[in-house]
Image (tube, rainbow, N blue to C red; front, side, top):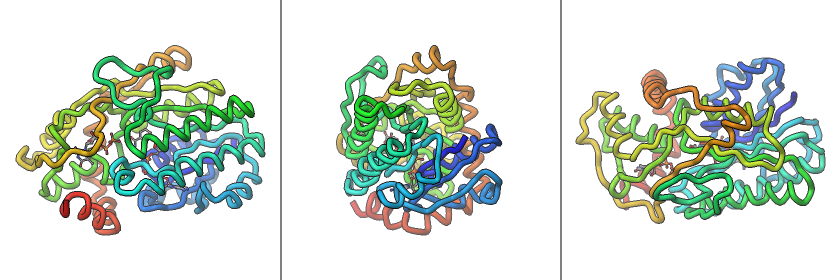
Length: 334
Ligand code: NAD
Ligand code: TYD
């Protein structure tokens, strides 16, 4: 099987490439990535010369480029490529529109032209918006609150429309918050770990009582593998870890694991339109495709902490680059 993975140099995409090459040595994987601030070839260094793996630098929103690449013939597209950080979408939504909406449409159009067998859109629980109690199912109303989640919702609706209109075999997955190796340190867990290791304050938005459901990135990759092989065109599958935590609970646990003082916690101004709680009903993927998470939250968290402890040069080089400007603007100058 020939897969085109987009955004494979980012957090989840690079974990997926590692996972897929190990689990399916017969798959041929081409990784198309623009290498934005979030894309990092260091994430793939150990497999860069592996047979069956190819890297191509390019933009999913570049129609000519995508057309030419898809002409090589693929069976499946797994679309991870996206601008993925809510806070950046609040500072400037434009790249989110360009990549997440226009880029997805260009991939869909290419998949239609070249009659690809399957198009997997890697989406998010954030498209449903916030829920105070209960859980969202795949039938729930879409109610995004940030420019990031609005752009992901638009992409989901385009996938739906290409399935309805052109019978393009698109499948949408909506996953909760991932944790694991190679996550860019602008996101909560790696931000807390790396700030704490540097004895810097750990910023908590608002009252810290917002709830997220956390899933180990390998469990997300396992779910995508099942969807690629057994998912039904036109369907949506929720993917969750069944690990709801308030941000404060999570941060306290991380500081404990790192043996750092709870006094590093610093409450800061809340994120605008900060979703209070995300929670998904994942019965569909369990009953129809037989997937459920394999890793406990405790195991996932300690594996993640260990990885950041062992890979200090990885995150230190990121933190000293473009990221330092973002961090200054976001946390030190407001
Ligand atoms: P990330 O920001 O770590 O990686 C995104 C990757 O996409 C980077 O390698 C970047 O260079 C690449 N990219 C960006 N724009 C591109 C373009 N125009 N053309 C080609 N490549 C481009 O993101 P992530 O956390 O790995 O998320 C991957 C996908 O999973 C996203 O679609 C995101 O919406 C979704 N998702 C993420 C989470 C999470 O917890 N991180 C949860 C659910 C869904
Ligand atoms: P984040 O990792 O940005 O993921 P998302 O907003 O997509 O769920 O944030 C996770 C939660 O942590 C979210 O409720 C916002 C909060 N948060 C903080 O309290 N402080 C921070 O510095 C960051 C980055 C996030």
